[in-house]
Image (cartoon, rainbow, N blue to C red; front, side, top):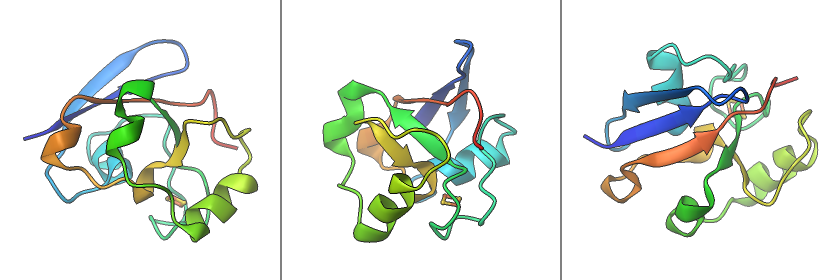
Length: 107
Ligand code: FES
């Protein structure tokens, strides 16, 4: 099963097993990873699942759709070039070892 590694703003790593087809957000919630709130439940409306994708993996994740782009533009946390909404990142075998960095806070 693919692994996803969440790195807190303080530098602490949490590695979780994430089944193919789940989202990076859902895997975090299921495993009690702190730092992802996901207030809208994953329907791309809240931006409280904001993560910064490790550069190595950026090319492996499909580009953000228009809705995600729009939500990132108004996100409480300042957008970076590697910003994504973790509810929109589907786990695949190819993403095994994916590293995402969490903002200090989500709002
Ligand atoms: Fe709300 Fe991702 S959970 S935008």
